[in-house]
Image 1: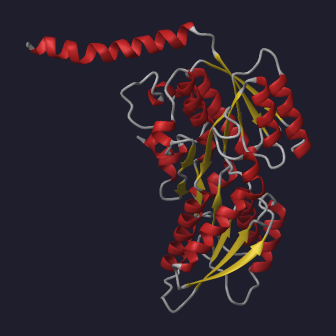
Image 2: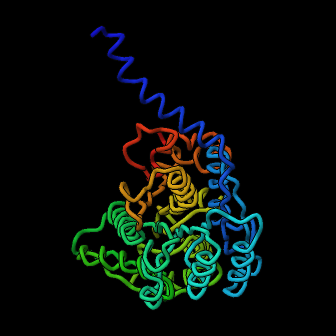
Image 3: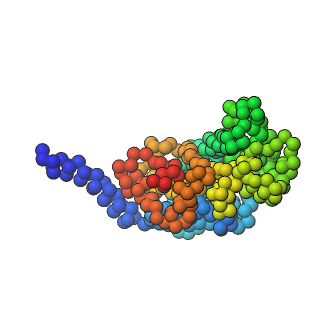
Amino acid sequence: MTIGNYYFRKFIPLLCVMLLASISCASAAPLRVGFLCPKPPGQGFWSQVIQVMQAAAEDLDIKLQVRCDESGSTFGTKRVGDQLLKSEPKLDYLLTGYWAAVTKYHLALAKERGIKVFIFNADIKDVEEEEIGEPRGKYENWIGHMVPDDTAAARELTKILVDHAAGKKKKTTADPVNIYAFVGEGFSTVTRKRNTGLRDQVELMPQVKLHEIPLEFWQVDRAKERAVELMDDPSGVDVIWAGSQDGMWGAAQGVEQAGKIPGKDVFIGGFDWNPDSMQAIADGRISASMFGHFMEGAWALLLVHDYHYGTDFVDDVGVKISTPMSAITSENYQRYKTILNEAHWRSVDFKKRSKIFNPALKSYNFNISQFLD
């Protein structure tokens, strides 16, 4: 066999598969996918989720319909979800977070309407787990569930902050690092997992003394007030660990208001980001923030797209999928900052991450660090 014939026989079948996939996707009507957003447009984390989803939808020829709950209430989220599921022309898929006492009704309505569902961002509460079950079980139209690994992220955040405090303050093993943690009050699975990760890591660090302060995650002003109060604590505050972006940002403001220097006197970290907190990370006032889960909406679209056109993700990642989070710090801020804007996501080719458009792809990669290459 000549070299030319070898390459012809080896690669022509692959090219045919790619061509057929492109023709199939192009000739069919665009997928109709609805996304239920629980907050008003333009608000923080969910705004980031939507930006990346829209970029992915354009690449994958998905007609994405976003409906936002202007009220931010449980009743409002149910009402908006009902409207989305009943809209015409009918959706092919619904993408949604998990909302206690709401999602089970949307799963049932979607099943009745013949609409498949993919849930992401939060796990099912224990009290509803038996009733709802797992993907492709009681609700066979619920095809997948993706959640960030909040426990591992919380462990990593704790370790980073303790390392900063111990290193820069030159603590010895006999000189404890005092962590004051703004922990959530345990109402959500996100809260519980982040609190668990914090406690698990502290158990492995005998030099750390943990002080937990129950605090509603999304209260900047309250976090600021508590941080100001903590600066008068005679035992000393080395680290403020926050279970949310708002808690982190409020803590940084409070430490500064009390006349201390974040990143020098006290090391602060949390989850998520906004433009203000990103600048604080860049200049070292916030030591670390865990992020990357805003990508889950785009990853869900990618899996739904491939599933719809014949490549089921179950054989690769299963139906219950855990995604990693990454730490952004002042040390790596310059590497990450270029990808934290809408223009970047418009330049990303999501087709390269699709097994339909890229049959040579062996496994899905849900790590945000891939975009640094």
